[in-house]
Image 1 (spheres, helix red, strand yellow):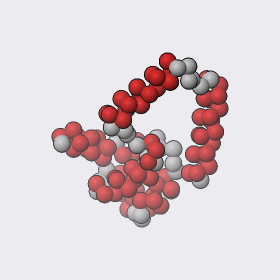
Image 2 (cartoon, one colour):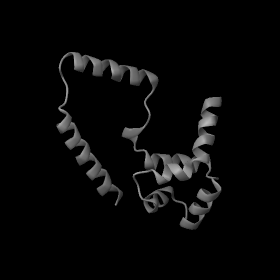
Image 3 (cartoon, rainbow, N blue to C red):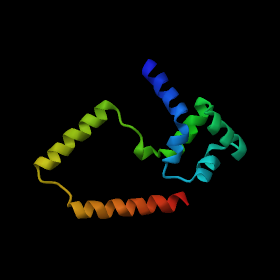
Length: 112
């Protein structure tokens, strides 16, 4: 439980940098948070979002498919990846780059 509280404090203390590095525009994040713009910026400056507000903000900037996996899920994913490599089931680097560029383009279009 201590680790979770420390992580919460770290997020609260660094929320301005987290939002700055987010792929989403601030106006979108504010809209999704449901907090009035002046209040949002005051809370951001003072770093005093409630836990509930931080949860809404984090769900906005970290869509479900990006969320952290559990240790078991990560280990299972790594095991599957190793099996795919061993079986020669790999992706060409240039195809991978093209797919990532397309995904980035889609995300940029989604944020407005």
